[in-house]
Image 1 (cartoon, rainbow, N blue to C red):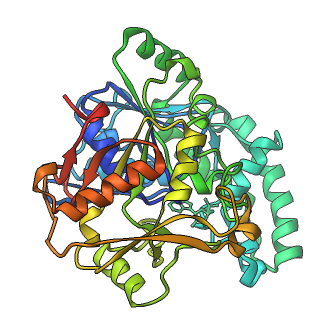
Image 2: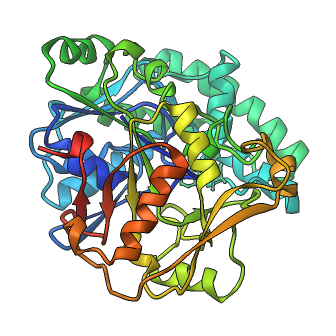
Length: 423
Ligand code: IMP
């Protein structure tokens, strides 16, 4: 399993891409098209929002599990885009759980309207309707993929859903109402496109567990965006931690062998919420420029800061990490002395919730930096001694071995140190 150990955008997809050829299935288990996975393969950049990144590996079956929220328009668009780029996408390579919930047009309208109304207090969502879709799921009034394929059930759902959403959109937010017939027409057309891919995925994944052909669970977002364990309320609406993979796929915890946490060698954040180690000066600007830190889904500039080891240590705990893949080490070249957050003044561990974290003052350890360009370095011994020290210090502070180090955007720009990546 691969999960984000920080606040999303850790570079999970590159790690998934490295592992995918070793396993038959790649499964997503939470989130939706709020994720934006940028992949560079053979120099070509591809951004995936919903389809697991195993789709770029010829032998992989890609599963959108029951815990994902699926925007049917986005999924069809993503399939068409991949096919246009010569990628084979068919029901043997892509499967969508009939139990997954559907993001409907009013979820997106409500997400955007609420954020607008919240003004400065907004969460900074991606505006993709994620929160409202999960609200309907947990409220037991959502629409599942199976219902999308049943035109009579869909028509009833749309009639009621549009009427309710319009009351709220028009009365509470002064937004434009949705037109029921247009919404229904669009969804029926999308259902026709998605029908071949939809099936119950639980049995299929269990067969893979039994046959030991391997499943790679691909987490989206990161630990501190988890609805339970993140910096509430500045979180997404799903369980991004490792435990979420079981509920979101129907595979039990005893089947999971390894949990790799992906952490960037510094930290970033899109959207609102406290970032204790944030750099709002020229160094932060430099990280953003050198690391190309702009959201893959919304294009928003990411807030950048020093590596927060206290947070990653917390992530190690709540995810049961067996290894860390440390990405983008190359971005830290030429930064002068480096700082690593090792805790917060007067606090034991990471405070829960946004208000407490906002007030927390990080304690830093200063480490010597390096000037050498690390781009593409693929052996541990070829790293400057201070870069090795930096990685080893992160291991010591988090208590988890760094099994992979990223040194560039390309698939081969990594240093393999062990764990699931070796062999
Ligand atoms: P939502 O998931 O669109 O509701 O957004 C909630 C919060 O999660 C916001 O702060 C978003 O910026 C953040 N978020 C959602 N998806 C991602 C992601 O894939 N990477 C980083 N941040 C994300």
